[in-house]
Amino acid sequence: MFQEYKSFQEEQGYRIMVELVRRIRASARRRGRSLAIGANLAGMGDGAVYGASVLGLPIWDRVFDFIIFEEGIASETDFGKFPQNSFAPHYRLGRAIVPGLVAALPGAGFADLVFGRKNSTYLAILYSEAFAFEGNWAIAHWWHYGWPSDALAPASLAELTQFVKRYRSLYEGPRRAADIAVVYASQAILARPEKHYSFMWLCKALGNAQSSIRCGVRRE
Amino acid sequence: MVYAGNDRFYSTRFDPQRLKNYSWVLLPAADRLTGEQLDAMREIQRSGRTLVAFKPCDPALAQIGGLQSVPDLYEMSWQGKGRLSSQRLTASLVGLEPAVRLGSEMEILATAYFRERLPGYILHFVNQVYDAKKDSVRRRASVLVDARRPDGFDVSWRLHFLAPGHAASTLEYETVGSRLRFRLPLLEVYAVAAFGRKLPGVS
Image (tube, rainbow over all chains, first blue to last red; front, side, top):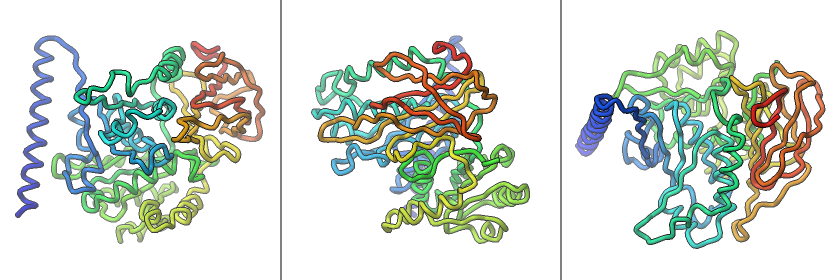
């Protein structure tokens, strides 16, 4: 009975969100405004693993123009360890869901972890990874903690931003299609949510040198 | 990357046509496939393309001739057998030619992209050898890069090295069969190598 109740709430929640987005778009159209709508799909995949909701799965491609993945990647023990802290699979999954911007957002625990410690190089690595995967990286600023506005955006990132702006032609425009498909079979992952991590690990392995498996093309 | 939906919130979104563009199809979740998905996987096998799935596989999928099933990287890692699983996966992907190799460097992320509208080949490098106590990376010098030769390449292409805080420069490279080899002079956190005859904003 609990499962039925949960399913009912999930479905209602989904329909309400779809309707809300539809009304916002209709309102913008009436005013002749262009609009892009995105959302922080906190814990996409992870949410399903922890039994939170099927809504954490990639069912939003018809609803949003861009998406943000929030993941609690860092703890004191794994802080700064790569590829564990890599957002590469999120960028890959996001690119398969929406055509627009894909951003990765470290969760609230991450913000607590990095605040007050020297972290500008760590942030620069995550920032650079986003460029390498053509994603966007976001960090949370928890205003109610009274943190200074530059606490999570050190000046050292400005140099990277200037670099990308200067060579923007290298980052813009469509890429040639890849030769490899990684299928994220939602119904299989709904049945066994931990398979989401199998997808994540495979994507990390394909993109990271540490595993010695690298994305490639078929040998001719 | 493609993905397949469920039928609860919308009609099945799986589109077999999208898979036709890929010569390799990897299935990290392969134990509950729909009939349509299974048909698509059979077609992949019939057309001579490569299908690799993590175990456990759907019984019907397991009967497809030529399927390469390998241990689940995630599950094996939990059991402390991640290296073994990785080796098995590497072996199953032996027909893939890496877009870029980095000599003995194992902790540098490298991605390679062709652009539709840009006559060039862009390689991104991120140094992930991070020391959390010092908040620093170990600077790398003279990193050997071995990259696949891009389509349309000819010897008039130049190799540009770009890094934040450094002036742009050109690098020497050599062609070895289907590969291009060169050395990154320096890698702090991030750098780009861009091949091309004329790259807007660079050349």
